Image: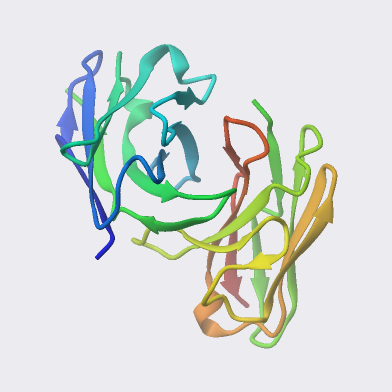
Length: 117
Length: 107
């Protein structure tokens, strides 16, 4: 069945780089776009970026200098990298899939990331 | 990036009430707006896409409308299971944007 699951380190030191993986099953990354969203504790959702079915990427303009999204279609994995982490990057990071238009049906469970020394 | 101004940030409702949440975009988003529900500790769930199209499984008491820059989301006959946070999302451009969210509480 369709699943998305985020994984990565729960704790990262300030100024370091965060690397997260979204592992999907039940569908192909060449058929669905994969987005990353994050949510600081007690706050709202922030769209971070997307890797489209063709492999192109688009990013939140504020985060763009620090953000990279890539994928390995053979392993059904999408990767998120965030550089120069600060405390404000603490939060839950989600990936979700999107097909036509704005339709999104499956999300990962989210992974909590804490930026602290 | 397009900015989405969502209001109110929170509201209190009694069971059976109708509530309305609005989102205003910084530019015309051509009806490309979706609405999500998020309950504590859970991932968001899409309820509506393209302004007013209910996603499969969304109860009919949820609705959406609007055009241009201004959009609204409503819940008629609020039920206890509707207590959650709600977010709009614009997807008119290649970069998407969420609204700030509205927390719906029971009065």
